[in-house]
Length: 467
Ligand SMILES: [Zn+2]
Image 1 (cartoon, rainbow, N blue to C red):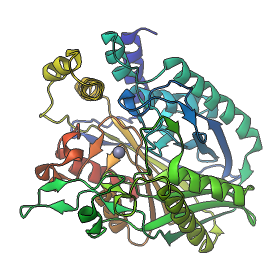
Image 2: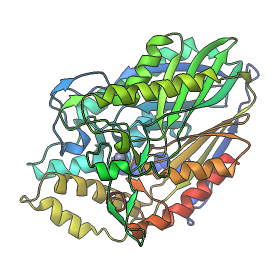
Image 3: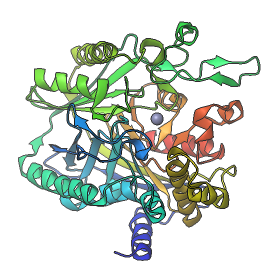
């Protein structure tokens, strides 16, 4: 497929997700589907391997590429049948899937499941010794000739083939859902706010990253977090078939050492999976844009198993509280969002940075993601947000690196409902701070590709999804 064909195809795919709503306001209704099958709902879990090969770039190519695989990266999800056309949710152990790459994943899963891409949510867990995929950014760096690739496109396509095979094989084994359950358990001493160290005007002075060795920063309070790990589980009779766990933190203990790992969140999920092999366990990262383990993580080898155990205990605590209730109607809602590009970025300046061979790799590969976003924003290709609403349960899928305030806000919008939020869907806009935080600077704001108007649009989108 040529570049321009690919672009027009992308537009077409996304255009069909709308139902006549104009996107002038930057956010619009997609559609709403109720379960209409008299046989009720059934679910088909699937998993497939997405571990990158030796030599593959990690995190966009500016950290050490893959040298060793310590443990596999997986894509784990389910197909939900009986809601009109099937619905697919898939969690991927990658840093991110951006723009066209995200659409390609949804398209592949949709094709295999016999549905349309707007009924597929793909959410990354956001580990960093992992692929961070934007196909437009890859074309930009590949044209330079001297830069590390962002993604090996053959490997990317091989993953999509595996996706199709896994989904095709799963569907005939779908099991009837009779009950759904929700619960939460507190995770102790993992999440902490990265933007806690401020001056008297509220401006961020230093970041408490995913790991932190500065005792002054570690001594500061956790700051605003969501300590609750939330679980939504599906049952067939008394058999738990699928259990989805949601927790908001960057999942890295240490990285940039060329050792592929699903890291502490993935390792906790794997441990739970070993304990409970009859059920498919899925882990989704919440709105963790400003959240990481820095207060509790010095980045040492010893810290990883400690953080793994704490997340694992949160999963166990949460699952102890599951009380299955008969499953009702399922509604799949989508909303289209066009986050406006941040004016601080200009294509000319970015192109100069990328072309400047004296710049470090990070200062050339990273701007290629920004440039890819500006090009997409110009084409007005929207992001699709979605929510699976079953009884009192809301499983909401948001894009990119949303700040924690968004998921707390979502819970406040529907206090009687159980709102579980996954972020790191379409990663095109990178960080999505709340509007007040743009003035306060810091790393996250410096790589927020969309402007502060995104806050109001995203909030409106969440209201539409959750109501
Ligand atoms: Zn991040």
